[in-house]
Length: 207
Image (cartoon, rainbow, N blue to C red; front, side):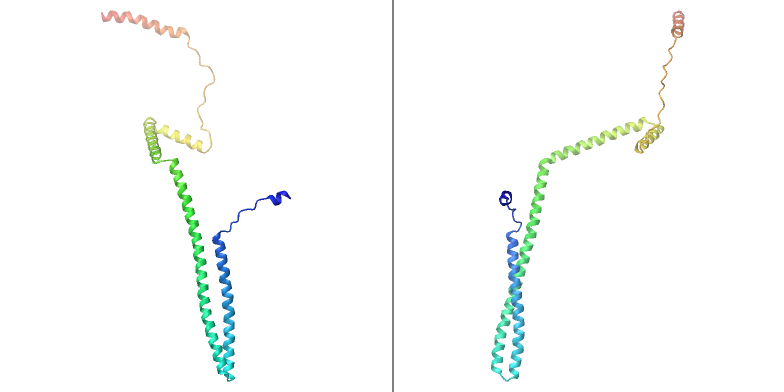
């Protein structure tokens, strides 16, 4: 029970403008009802005046028509008041729309300002310069690779790229697992002895 009575009521979403529009529409509806009632009454009085003329009661018919004339003027004023109320309702509703648009523009402007504070013009220029330098560096690497690789190498690179894109492994040559046989020392010593014998002969010829 304490939670029920102690719970805070939510703030109403109905604004003063909404209340004003509701009151204006209520007044408009009352005037329309009055207008409808007067119109029916005027029609009855017109028929009654016609009947009085038939009965020879000209004075009463004339008095009734004068009353009808006055009510016609009231009916015209009522119509003008209804038009004014409807125009006022439309103005308030349009003003509400304009206020929402202005609020949206304000939020957008604040968002742009915060973004500008995060990244200044100098930061943008620096990023653009760094991007241009990276593009130029990559272009130089591409040119160097293009000059160093043959057409066969280019085809192999493209084939490997296509295989990676398709999720397949490129067939590479197998690495031998057996140990490389060692060269005997005698086989390496023989050429060295021959070269040593040739040196004195070359020196004698040169002398």
